[in-house]
Amino acid sequence: LYTPTVTLSEIAPSNTILYYATNELVLEKFGTEGTDYTHTFADGVGRIIKIDGNWESLPNNAFASSTAGVTKIILPETITAIGKRAFYNVQTLEEVVLPTTGSGYTVGAEAFSKCANLSNINLSMATTLEKEAFRECVSLVEVNLASATTLGYNSFRDCAELAKVELPNVSDSTDGNSNTIYGIDSGAFENCP
Image (cartoon, rainbow, N blue to C red; front, side, top):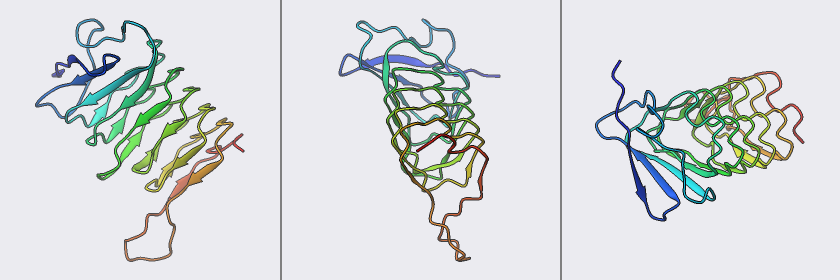
């Protein structure tokens, strides 16, 4: 299995780290901390991580339980899958910028679970949310699921502030122009207002 090299370089402002690679389509893993990537920052506040390039998938556990003070993650428009527990329990994470064009993407099981400060995320191109994808994201107020076809078990369970959910337009039409949500598993919105 070939593991692509991830090149790390800083971009302005100084609290932003850009991860990118060239000529690779799938990020299999980041490699060894300190060699291929880093979570170490000078002041530990207001950090932004941008993953650039032609990545199609973010690996499982990529940033799970990071304590680096990351507040914003920017993923490229080419992402089709966010791995299981990719951002699990990143307590400082407030905002995630996801693709707004393309054919959609899957959010893996527990990908953003327990991100207590996550309040800003546009899921309009998410097609599948696996189990517990956003469980206990207690600061999440609204989500746009306009392209969703499947919401897994406990997808948004215990999102205590989640007051607005935009679902696909469901139609009996067979013209192929309407999105249809095929499955909402049990507990998807349990313990939400």
